[in-house]
Length: 105
Image (cartoon, rainbow, N blue to C red; front, side, top):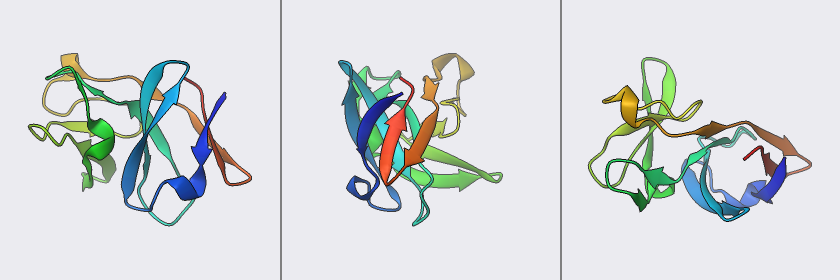
């Protein structure tokens, strides 16, 4: 696990990008709770590092992020793409310890 950021660095309802060993990871904090999700930051449809700027949404009881480019949806728990499973991104385990966000990336 690698230290990504402090929990308070992620405003509830938003995402941020963390650079972990040269790799961009999008971190999302859907609510005030200390629950954080991590997926690749790179939108595979456009090869652009923008997913951390997407909008968090809920679909059929699961949390997703809509890419800010063309709004494809990626599940926060595992990076699965709703519109095209072949374009899914990597999801990463996350732990929040003592207000610090740790990612296994």
